Amino acid sequence: MVELICCYRLNFDYMRLMIIKKFLCTLALIPFLAIDSAVKANDNFDLDDIKLYDIVKVEQCLDQAYDTVPGHARKLEFKIEGDDPIYEFDIESSKDGSTYNVECNAEEGFIIEVEREVDENNPIFKSGAKVTLQQAKDYALKIHPGRVVAEEREIGMDGTLTYEFDIQTNTGYEIKVDVDAVTGKIEEANFELYEIGIEKE
Image 1 (cartoon, rainbow, N blue to C red):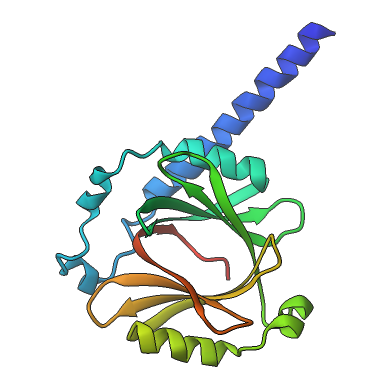
Image 2 (cartoon, rainbow, N blue to C red):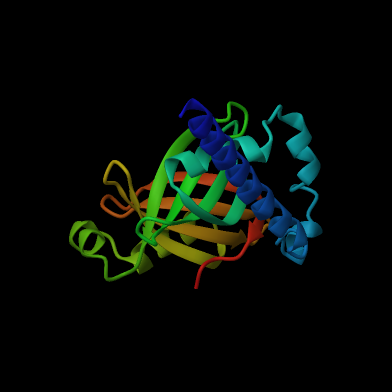
């Protein structure tokens, strides 16, 4: 009996490792980092800055993310929140099919935030939001002028409602801005260093 349990555990760990390796290999095959040509030409945004941080391997954070939300990783982003480097995985849950944004501190290797992406018809978001998507977008662009290249509605595990905008700024860098859907205030604005993968349609 003990031998069967050990064998099952070893097989489970091996399968988990293979899933992580498959995801990382898939990322490697995606045509290089999705960085706009304007960003490439801008010296203010240098991927070499990542070397300034003592970060854990992406596999460690991905493993933590899968422990939190079992499923399939569709996208990886690396961003800076304050002074902290963050891996953010978009994981399509194998339980409910929803996409979750799972953030992992890239220096410590632990999960710091989980949010579920929802559409405009989600009853919880519709009833709770006091600010429209357009109002939130206008305010985000007022503070960070540029062009919105992606937008999301998200519900945090603590019930918070957030509009998230990826903005290609007029100065050449990309910034991710979160606006509280209840108060209309900017919760955070983070520099995105790179993005690998494709958003679920």
